[in-house]
Length: 119
Image 1 (cartoon, rainbow, N blue to C red):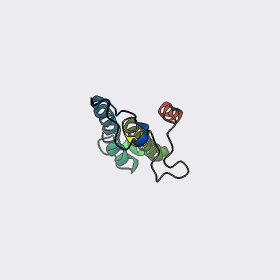
Image 2: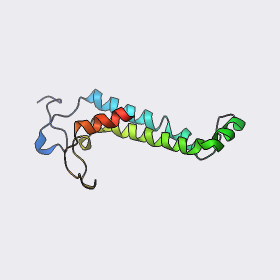
Image 3: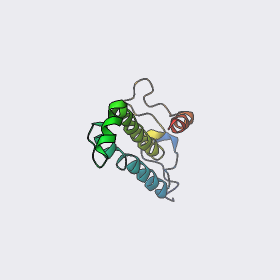
Image 4: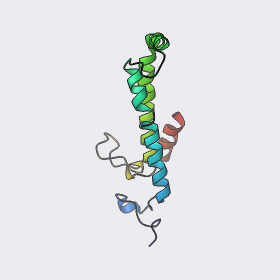
């Protein structure tokens, strides 16, 4: 049996084959670049620390609401990373047991498409 035809771990009775290895690598690279490449510096800025920036312009921008804006951007980067991983992980097909109201139900493809489109 080829690697493409082997069932995904946790797929259970669905029998859906796992993703190709290069797709898994790409998903993890996307998730890491979205989170580790973006969040650390922007989280520092969101906390009001003008690291590697023009301090005068930063203080003026931050006073006008830059902090909450950066927190939202960081949350969106984490969400983008989670969506990238959901394409290759079992919880991208079935909601985990700890999710209220939809536990262990299949994830509708429209849900993933709508979330990806929103980003």
